[in-house]
Image (cartoon, rainbow, N blue to C red; front, side, top):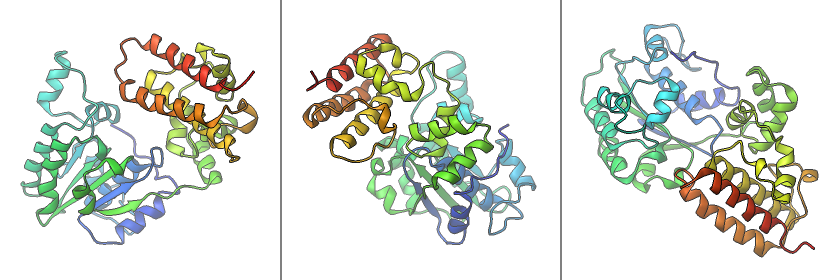
Length: 334
């Protein structure tokens, strides 16, 4: 069971905004780390709550409790299996058995079988009489076949059916999916608000500030950064990579390392055109190389991102990434 936490202060007003409007399908969109999943779940709780108010669910009724224990008969949650397990949602019996028997690993996509189960779920009668809800997150993890499976039900839903799709890359969704939802772009919290929220999550002031910097001001991503201690301080990463020190990235997986280097490349480009860096403090960055070298590095990092989830050898890939970064950052320097 996942404990229910109060909604973050920048999300609570957005919940009220969505609840005040009519619609059967919502698309919560924005970059990662702004709280798409907590907002989507709060919306679901309010829709199904027996004593809901304009501010959201009561948190005390049988419906709220059923969601807390991941057992609400009128809620269908569609997440990648990796996220289902992480967040405490039960997998279908067949899928759980396949994973338990080591026949396959948990999927990082929303499988088409889960979408077919959702279509079947939509045809049932509501068990509690307050309608049925489907939550999809991250919606961009549906492949085209899975998305098309959902589309028909999204176009012609039963009268008591609602959908909330939460996405961290809405541009990857089918246009037909986007057009059938009411879009709600998530608002960014101001830095003071985000910092205060991180401290309520048990993060000390200095690490919270560093984590917010590393995440580009996205508090939920900052919380993950703060909870993942690294032997190399964030501020030391640019200079270590500039020296070609592979230990700078040794703590991270290849996908995480690519993300860190993309942030570094972004900030170097900012310096090159006279803008303020976003992810690192200016004093922690080496002098930027010429823009053509940065553009070539950014392109190479984009290519690496496509295979980072399944590298042939993670250690060799990290060494290659640092070598590539070292060459790019030292290009044009004596």
